[in-house]
Length: 77
Image 1 (cartoon, rainbow, N blue to C red):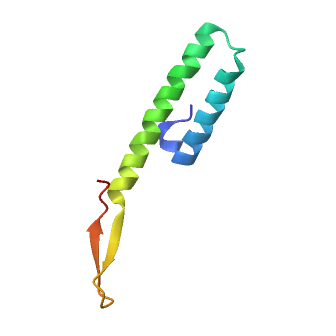
Image 2: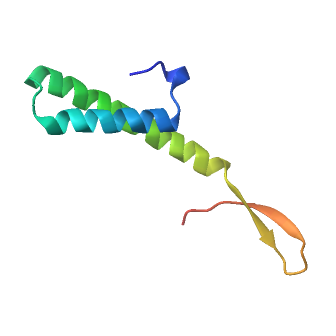
């Protein structure tokens, strides 16, 4: 796994896909498979954290109908 400071979402997803592919091949010994699984879980949590941070940064522009726009926070619910 790359250094956390070098890790962006796209890189993390790519690494996660590579780990999934390795695990699906079933040619790893148990210790290596568990190690890869743990690495995948850590990457998954990092991706989730990155998505949550991005979601908090998103704002939407609301048009009042008279071409007056105001910013509002993006709400997921």
